[in-house]
Length: 342
Ligand SMILES: [Zn+2]
Image 1 (cartoon, rainbow, N blue to C red):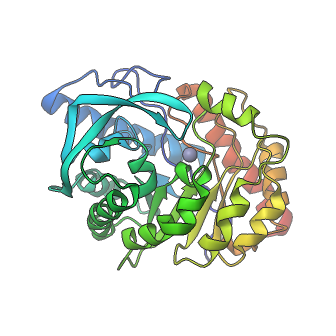
Image 2 (image 1 turned 30 degrees about the vertical axis):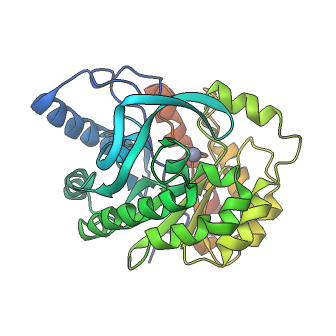
Image 3 (image 1 turned 45 degrees about the vertical axis):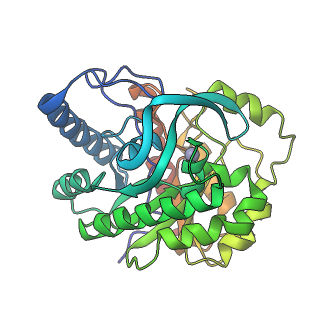
C-alpha cells in the first residue's frame, strides 16, 4: 500500500562548508573544474543520506549542484550576458545585481539532467526536482531584448519544458516549478502566468508541482512579511486559476505564517505540499507542532492528497538546524499516521 502523508522538502538544503561557504545565498564554489564536479556529486550523496536518515520519503537533490535556484538555470541559456550586470528590484522588494537578456534566449544544453541521473542511481525512493518558474526567472534579470515580461516568459517556458522532459526521462518522479513571484504579481498570474506555466509542463507524464511561498528567511523577505498584516490572503487571488490548471500539486507556506488555512479549500482536488516547517527561524519545530499544522490542513485537504513539507528551501540555514527540522518533519507526519491508523 502507498504510504500516506509522504514527507519532502521544498528543495534546497545547506551545502557542506568544503563545497561553498554556508548560510548565505549565491555562495561561491570553493572548488573548480573536475574537483568541483566530484564535490557536487559528493554533496548530492551526503544530502540524500541526510534525508534518508531523517526519514524523508520523497528525495530532492537539496540543490547541491546549483549556486542559486534561478540564476544557475539562466546561466545555461544563450542570449544572457552575465558579465555586464544590472541592478533590479526583485519582486518589488530588494535590489540584486542580475544578468541581462541581450538576444534571443534558448537552451543549448541540459542543465541538471546528469545530476538527476546521478541522484536516481542512489535511491529507489521517488525523487523530486525543482526548476525555477518562468515568471520568477523574468523577475530575476534585466531584459534588454524582448522588452516584454510575457514574451520573455514564453521563451523561458520553452527552455524549461525541454529540461523537464529530459529530467522525466532521467527518472525524476515529480518536477516542481518555484514561483515565489506568483505571490506578488497577481494580475500577471491571471493574465499569462498560468498559461506560460502550462507551456512549461506540456507533454509531461510525471507529476508536476508548483511552489509558491513568501521567500527564503532572509531579511528583505521577513521585513516584507511584517507589512502584510495579520491575515495573508495573497493565495486567494491565484488559487482559483491554479485549481483550474493541469498542475498536479501545489506547495504552500503555512507553519508560522499568517495564511488562513481555509484558503486551501480553493485548491480542493489538487495534491497539497503543506509547509509544516518554518525556514525563517533557527528554532527547530517539535514533532507535535508539525503534527498540529498537518492536522489543521487535513480539514481542507483529503489525506491521500496531503504531502507534509517545508515552507521554502533551507539553503540559508546551518546544517544542524536543517537536519533537526527534517527529523521533526518526519516525526510529525508519523504522529498523524498513527493517530489516523494509516
Ligand atoms: Zn520558496
